[in-house]
Amino acid sequence: MTEKLVFPSDEWIEKYVDALNKNARYEDAAKTWEGDFVFQIDADGKTIPEDVRFYLDLWHGKCRSARMAGPEDTAEFVYAGPLSNWKLLFDGKIDPIKGIMARKFKLTGDMGKVMRYTKAALELVATTREIPTKYLDE
Image (cartoon, rainbow, N blue to C red; front, side, top):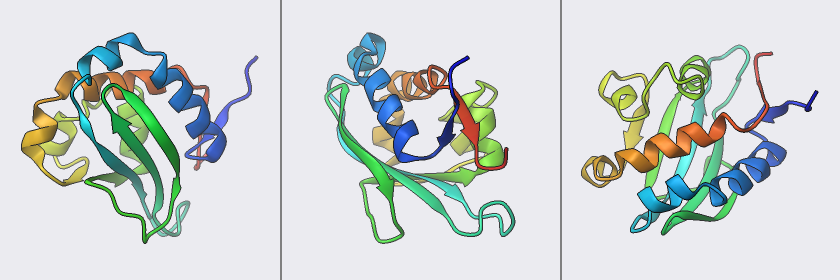
C-alpha cells in the first residue's frame, strides 16, 4: 500500500506538481493561463489553529514552482476554505467554481479570469485524486 502524504505538506506538493505537470488534459485546458495561486485551508481553532497555505505558480499549462506558504506570501489569486470543504472538493463532491458561488470557498482575485478557465480548474482538482492523501484531521 502506498504511504499517504499529509495535505498540505512539502511532500504532498512535490507529488502533486509532478502529477500536474504530466497531466495533458490540464496542460491543454490551461495553455494560455498565466497566474499564481495561494491555496488556503482556513483555521478552525481546533485541528487547524492557524491558516495553512501553499503556493502554486501556474504558467501555460505547467506548474513552474510550488511550496508551502506563510501569511506574508501573496499571489494573484487566493482560494480559501475550511478543511471539510477541501476534502469534499478533492472527493469530487464540490466543483471548484460552483464552490465559490455557493460560498464553500472564497476567491480573492479576478473572478472573470478564473471563469474563462473552468476546465483547467477541474483538472487541477482531478489531479489531486492521484495523490494518496492524509488530511490534517486524520
